Amino acid sequence: MDEKVENNFFFDWIMPIAVAVIVVLLVNHFLIFQIEVKSGSMTPTLLKKDRLMSTVIYDYKSIKRGDIITFYSREYDDLFVKRVVGLPGENVDIDDKGIVYINGKKLNESYVKYPSPTEGHFKIPNGKYLMLGDDREISDDARYWKNPYIDKSDIKGKVRIRVFPFDRIGSVQ
Image (cartoon, rainbow, N blue to C red; front, side, top):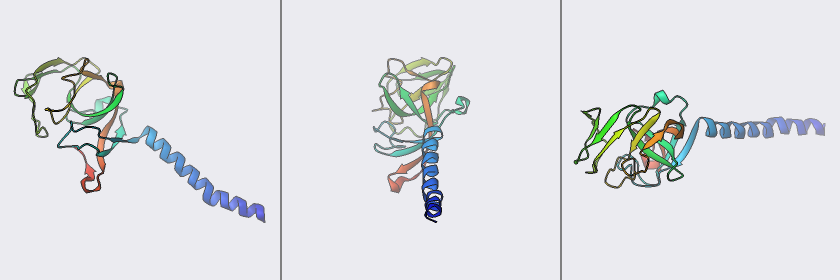
């Protein structure tokens, strides 16, 4: 009788908890992950200390201009959150007023509140992306990095929702 009670306790309590923990760990590692914004470079879209949920990217063809991406910076040995501005094979020009042009066509960037007069020309290699922050006045981004291009293998996820602070919970675009 005692053995039956122990088996019931194991299968009724311990086993479901163990399975739930394993599922959470697998989902957190292979499907979604959380990241905290470390700077104000994405203001006003994202603020410093915002907590975000990102989905892991397995199909790089799903990355679109304007997506907010989490990626690993080899130069800084850290995870960053920036917006995709340039795609593989494109020419990106930034003029002296901070206006961005993709292959000669002006890019509509309604999310940029503070453009920067930092000029630049970028010919993006295949398999690479160009990332910029939304607050161009303070963003440490591709315009200043030694290697301005992010390899697709360093892209970790696409930001989907803000989970903190609670008064700003919602999807991120």
